[in-house]
Length: 108
Ligand SMILES: [Zn+2]
Image (cartoon, rainbow, N blue to C red; front, side, top):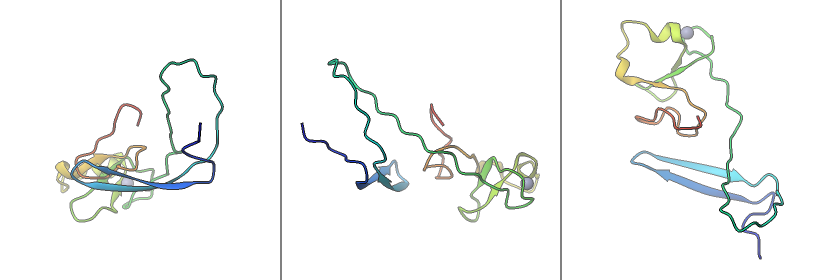
């Protein structure tokens, strides 16, 4: 059987649920398994990036997308009553974090 991915190969993947997210991925390691005939589940997870609050420098927990896609806030700063909470989205360990209406999935 010819492998589909070989370590070092790069490829692109596009999520499109109304707000497109483009990923550039690289195969990192080949894992040999015994073929049992059962379905294989492939899981991949990145190390979550550290987000720093745009206002105070503490660890951030929310995106705030009212004016841009760059503003992130900590819990304390996200409680500012001047903010419109409909623009607050939780930071998740996903390339879709901060994308319109994305609040995370089962594993992030
Ligand atoms: Zn803060």
